[in-house]
Length: 100
Image (cartoon, rainbow, N blue to C red; front, side, top):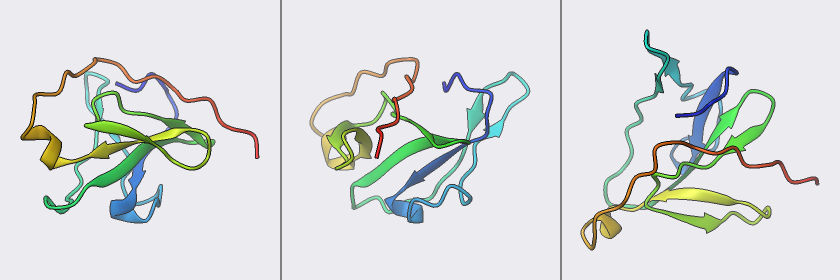
C-alpha cells in the first residue's frame, strides 16, 4: 500500500513512463489499485509516481535494478517466479528524489 494521499500512477516500460495512462483508483476501504495488461513473455520495468514527482518502489516486485538516476525500479519477471516463490512485504516505502 502506498501511504500517500496524492494521486498516484503506475509508470513503466509498458506505458512509456506516462503518468496519465494508469492512475491508481481508490476502493471504498481506502486501498488503491490499477489493472494493466502487459506481455507475459518479457520483463517489465515499473515504479509508482505520486503527484509532485515522488517515486515509490514496490517491495513486491520480482527484483529491483538500478535505474541510472541513482535509484532503483521494480521488475516483473515471470522467469523468476518459476525458480522460487517470492516473499511479499506488506508496505511500500517512498524513495527520496535525487537532485539533478
